[in-house]
Length: 91
Image (cartoon, rainbow, N blue to C red; front, top):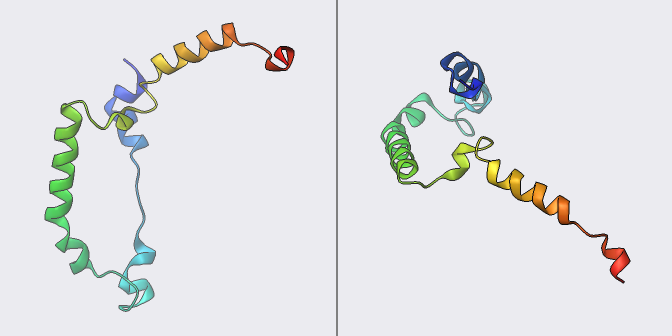
């Protein structure tokens, strides 16, 4: 099993975003977000997450497979390297 398929590795690699310095407690109510504002986005975030998962099931959002879906690209690069020509010699 590859590392990226292991639950422990997935948890260790999970992206975490620290938004403390965006909150009103740190920078004030004029510029910062309140906890209420963040909580009010909950249903929109859940819907977006659901839609992304559905689209991925249908074959969309290939970028979410990066960098694990690069075999075809690597194969193409290797083929091109074998047939590469020094263009300066063609002039």
